[in-house]
Structures are given as C-alpha cells and as structure tokens.
Image (cartoon, rainbow, N blue to C red; front, top):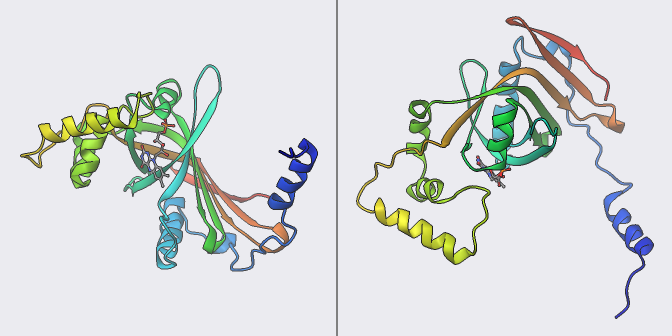
Length: 230
Ligand SMILES: Cc1cc2nc3c(=O)[nH]c(=O)nc-3n(C[C@H](O)[C@H](O)[C@H](O)COP(=O)(O)O)c2cc1C
C-alpha cells in the first residue's frame, strides 16, 4: 500500500483547513451606543434573535473548566437551561463523577462560549460558579423526559464502563426500579450550576476580520463597557 509522506499529508490537511475564500462577516455591526446597559439584557436580545433565526440549538455552549493546582484545562458542550433573574447562566450536569465536576471541586472559575454562525456572533462569559441546591435543581429534573432522568441516575458520567451492554443493563435496572412511578428523586450529585458572570464579551463578525468586540466588566454592582481590538 502506498503511504503518504508526512509532508504530503500536511499539505492535504492544510488545503482543507486554510480555505482562502473564507466567509466575510458583513451581516451587522455592534456599537457601544446600541448595547444594553447590562450584559444579561444584551444577551437576552441576542439570544432571542438567535431563536428567531432558527439557529440550531442556540443554547449550546462550550464550558471550560480548569483543575488546580495543575492548571490543566478541559472543555465540553453543554446546554444553557436558564438565564436567571440575577443574570447567572445556569447549566445542568453530573457533579459527582464527571471531569467538569472534578475540575470544579478545585476551582470555581469557569468560562463559556456561544457561537451563532448564522448571525456571525460569539458571546463569551467568565465568572465564578456555584452549585444549586437539590431543591433548586429538582424542578428542572422533573421536567426532563423519564428516560433522561433514569439515565442521569444510571450513568456514572465520564467513568469507564466495560461495555455498551453493561451500560444498557444498568439503565434497565434503574428503569425497572421506577417503572410504576413518575416521581424520581433528583440524585444528590446531579443538578444545576449557576455561573455568576463578571466578564461578558459580545463579538459581532465584521468584514476583513475587523470585528466589533464589546466587553462588560463587573465593577461593584455596575458594569464597565469597553471596546477591544479584534
Ligand atoms: C449538544 C450537546 C449538549 C450537551 N449538553 C449537556 C448538558 O447540558 N449537560 C451535560 O452534563 N452534558 C451535556 N453534553 C455532554 C457533554 O458534552 C460531556 O460529554 C459530558 O458532560 C461529560 O463531560 P466531562 O466529563 O468533561 O464533565 C452535551 C453534549 C452535546 C454534544
């Protein structure tokens, strides 16, 4: 069999990655005078526009966590379930066994990124997070389809399991336990994480990559608004 040289392989890859005819961002602009007074209101406005544009899963975001003292960073996609009345971004997950749980136990600071391609927009959020109580998490847990609730109980998220069959067997055992009821208690380790933002960035793509980037930095109970370079 003919093997490609590493150089040839790199060339093939780079022609795929570095497409010279990259998309130009010309849809909109973002000016200091047009942004809302508070970042959560600006986020609400953009989020509604993302929904109106029928962007696929606009609530999908990338959550980055960092383990201390190693400083090692990991990230994954999760779904925003709520922007609460304090302007906190709430996500739900397993806080017992997952990688994000292990990271969060050592370091409460996280960052989030939304990307809405069709609007040529990115939103970045940074802040300290805290876990919601079982009582605060239960209402959302109850809204989830039964299968997802059972899955949350059966799955030791991010821990190794010997096979798909073993996983399905574990799920089936939990399903059997709750077969006659809709009332399933939210597991101790499962629930909401509220991210309390102290920094937001609203990025509107512009022509020739000279983008608009407006940032909000928390100062007491107020927000300082600035423009940063693309
Ligand atoms: C579109 C999408 C949405 C997801 N939403 C969630 C979510 O809301 N909560 C969650 O725990 N995992 C969610 N996941 C799975 C995570 O990406 C990840 O696999 C899981 O949380 C374990 O990550 P960890 O071990 O780094 O903590 C989602 C994955 C995708 C692709």
